[in-house]
Every structure is written in C-alpha cells, then in structure tokens.
Length: 403
Ligand SMILES: Cc1cc2nc3c(=O)[nH]c(=O)nc-3n(C[C@H](O)[C@H](O)[C@H](O)COP(=O)(O)OP(=O)(O)OC[C@H]3O[C@@H](n4cnc5c(N)ncnc54)[C@H](O)[C@@H]3O)c2cc1C
Figure (cartoon, rainbow, N blue to C red):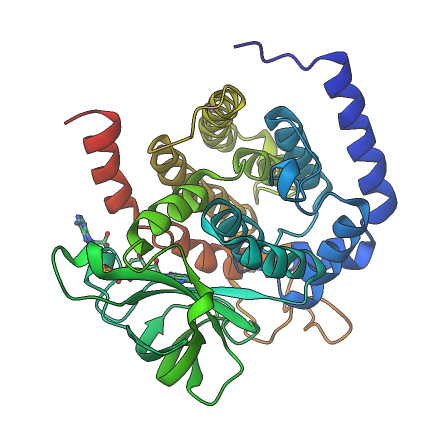
C-alpha cells in the first residue's frame, strides 16, 4: 500500500484547503467547537450542509451515479482530514451516511428520486429508529409492530435513544412485520413521517444535560406501503449493511488527531502548578504520545479499508475493529482534555447552546476549559451507540479472528 499522495491528490488537498479557508465562517467553526454532543445542533449542521451542497461536496461519500461528486476513496479521506483540521462541523450522519446508502442500494427508483435530493437540500432531516426498551444489543428481539392494511402500515410500539428525533421530520425504522421463523426473518425497514398524530417524542437528557436523545412512541402511526425499503423481511439484511456504514463509514482518526494537536498546543501554555508548563512534563508527554500512536494506528487501518474499497471490496466486519478502537480513543482524547485544565476543567454548565450570542460565560479560566467536561461526559456514549464495545468484541472474535 502506497501511503504517499500523488501530485493530483496533493492538488485536490490544496483545493479543499482553499475552499475551507473561504467558506468555513467563524460562526460555524465556533458552533462546531462548542458542541459537546456527538452531533452538532441543526442550526450549525444544516448551515454547513448547505454550503457543501452548493459546492457539490455534501454527497462526497455517495457514488457518482447517485449524485456524488465522484471522489476516489483517497479524496474522501483527504476531504475528511482537511475538514477535521479546519474544525468544520460534523455532518448529518443519519441522513447522509446511514439512510442515503440504504436508499441507493436497496430503494425503488421512486424512493431514490424522491428522498435522495431531499437529504441534500435539507428538506428532510432523518432520525434512526432501531433500539427499543429491551432491544439494543439484542436488536433482533425488537417488538415495534407494523401491520399492513391496504396501501398503508399501521405502527404500534416505541423506539428509544433516538438521536435528534425532536428535530427530525422523518424516521427510518426497523419494525416487526412477521412472527414466523427466526426473529430476524420478521423484521422490515420502513420510512415514516414524524409529523403525524400517532407519533409522540419524549426527551431524555444525557449526563451533561444535553437534549440529544429521545423516546419515540407510535400509537397507530401510519406509513405508506410504498415507503417499505426492500421487501417485508429484508430489514435485518439492510440493518447489517447500515450498521457497517455506521461503524466504519467515516475516517475517524483525522478528527482525533486534530483534537490531540489542539490539546498539545494548549498544554504548551498551561502552567503545571510548579513553575513550569504542563506540556513540558515527561509524564504528560508520555500519555500524549501513547494516545497519538494509537490514533495513528487507527488512521492506517482506516486507510487500509479505503484501499480495499478502492479495489471494490466491501469494508465488512473490519468496521467493528474501527468502531471499537475509535470509540475508546475518543474517550482517551477527551480525558486528556479534562486533565489539561485540572479544577477548571470540571465546570459543568448545563445551559445550551454553548455557542452563539446567548452562550453562558465560562465560570473560570476559558471557553476551552468550559467545554472539556461536557465533551468528556458526552463521549461516554461512543462505546455504546452503534453497538457497544462488548458487542463489537464478539463480532471481531467471530468474524475477524475466526474464534
Ligand atoms: C447517545 C446515544 C445515542 C443513540 N442513538 C441511537 C439512535 O439514534 N437510534 C437508535 O436506534 N439507537 C440509538 N442508541 C442506542 C444504542 O444503539 C444502544 O444503546 C446500544 O445498542 C446498546 O443497547 P442497550 O442500551 O439496550 O444496552 P444493552 O443491550 O441492554 O446492554 C447493556 C450492557 O450489556 C452488554 N451486553 C449486551 N449484550 C451483550 C453480549 N451479547 N455480550 C457481551 N455484553 C453484552 C452491553 O455491552 C452493555 O454493556 C443510542 C445510544 C446512545 C447512548
């Protein structure tokens, strides 16, 4: 594997850098940096999406025939790395990276024509209805039921931990349409409008006081039969495809490395309480180097997966390795952030948002110090969502190591 960029790839990197320098406003950058939860709030995320869409780069992961810009896997990587280095907001993962590939891989022509452009324009903002109370890791046990009545499905049950359901106008759901055979066989993938009397969204506040997740209740909610993706019973196959994209469909190392660079820069000026600077201490340097080496190892793994994709090989269960490592490293990086500031890093303002004109002032020290505890508490979720680390370890044992 050749890890040096070609002259064309370096030219592309310069093009991305120039675009970011021109288009990424201070307001967007501030909103991204001061968003402690996994997804940025829609006012920031959608505004950045619109800028990228105008440039034709919002669909940078999509194949050209479905509206993507035709980036090679290496260009995708360069694009993600430069966005991370520039501090750009994260994108609307659920719509762009999870739902859209399902639609173009499994959807009808009518579904592709209708839904894909609406993802790009921001007309549709999707949330993901997989987990239920009692069905998370054991997803195949899900009970939310959809019964076909003429050209409609009637849905009853509930979904939980549904990220941004309070912002979304649509939800993609795994629903039970059959009770015969293995539990997996009776699961279907259905697209549902959120704006209807049969749906209620109840907020759940997370550790840091963020409203990011919800419980969604379906009481005789209605979906069009034409919004079934694939056939009845295809839901498990589609969910596995989607979860592989969720676990490994992005380059996560560049953002971790960019955050480490920032922590290193701040530590160089932070007093160590003994007349020196924290960044000069041997123990601190050792910790930083250890995490950085692991992030660099992750980056090489991500590049290897990209090389496989370039050769037409699907990423497959290796994505569980990526999810496992990236989630643990996210938590390691955020813990370094807390340790950087000592007491000042322990402040927890639960007012939201932490950006914009009405953002609360830091109680002590600086805006950077104000962010570390909310970020640390939010990153506890990384080893849970998209499949817990224990579940990833089982998948790795079975499918990667053959145990
Ligand atoms: C912030 C956040 C956002 C989320 N967003 C969404 C969303 O938008 N949509 C959605 O559908 N879901 C979402 N989830 C839900 C997430 O996918 C589930 O929480 C996750 O799959 C774990 O399921 P559970 O919570 O039911 O835990 P459980 O499955 O009950 O697990 C509890 C514990 O038991 C362990 N465990 C379970 N089974 C095994 C096993 N076989 N072997 C070893 N250990 C095991 C787990 O690792 C865990 O430690 C989100 C979760 C969080 C925290």
